[in-house]
Picture 1 (cartoon, rainbow, N blue to C red):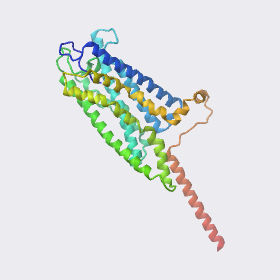
Picture 2 (tube, rainbow, N blue to C red; picture 1 turned 180 degrees about the vertical axis):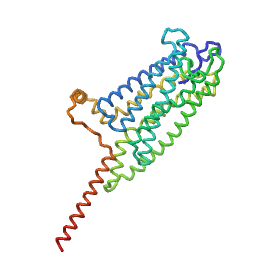
Picture 3 (tube, helix red, strand yellow; picture 1 turned 60 degrees about the vertical axis):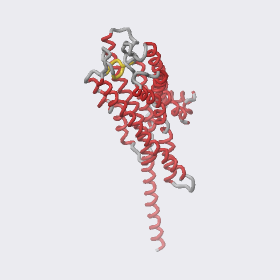
Picture 4 (cartoon, rainbow, N blue to C red; picture 1 turned 30 degrees about the vertical axis):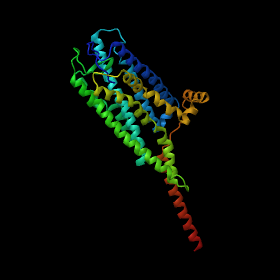
Length: 352
């Protein structure tokens, strides 16, 4: 997200060619993520995988990464041959979009990690609270990302648009730097630290749980195994991907804070290449899912397309959540108990 200013004074740490190279590298990575995220969204919608909560969480993450990819691709400041005033207005909008899309992507990873923690560690289910996930991902960032508009802090930020840290005369814009830290850097790394702690608990709980899977048949154990297979395993890699792709941005930002007048161009390239690739790497665990691989066969594509083209004949599929299955099993057990009691009473009366 960040870069140095677009000034042309001698103190400028990058020349224009360096700016173009770093920014173009980020745009190329963002385009790859855009294509990958779009493909994941298409598969989830086309094969109706969205009917399952786990796949809807992947869908929300893919939508967020798609929007973030678009934000990165459009925030280059020299795409259009327009006057400076229009370019400044464009940068205000693009900078806000970049900030909001980045937060949506982060919040989607937060929701997935919390969902994993609740399923694997706390062992609770929150299907009825899915609206909280949606609110956090798509609407919560609006509650604070409007703040830079107060001081017109969105604008040109080096080779792209974000929260500016320089004025037009190349003097430092200190409030913009404060906005960067308060609205992105500090909460980003605090959240990542918390998510890493939660992820360690998740892995520890899964390890301990699997050690108790060996032995006699136990319905509770089987239910936990099925929950792990259907709700934990499909999501387990997404937080790791986000952590890993933020390593080079963290190193680069730390280096820039320690050496503000001596940036490392290699770190800037690694930052620009890796950060936008979240969408591309999100596609890997999704495509490695056995069910998804089966759907990629041409025969399954034709079958799904034919189902979409068929007229509604009144027969519809309704996904069964595990909570519904538990209720049905409970009613069956109660009915079985009542039948057994009635049979025993009948036998006692007949004997007497």
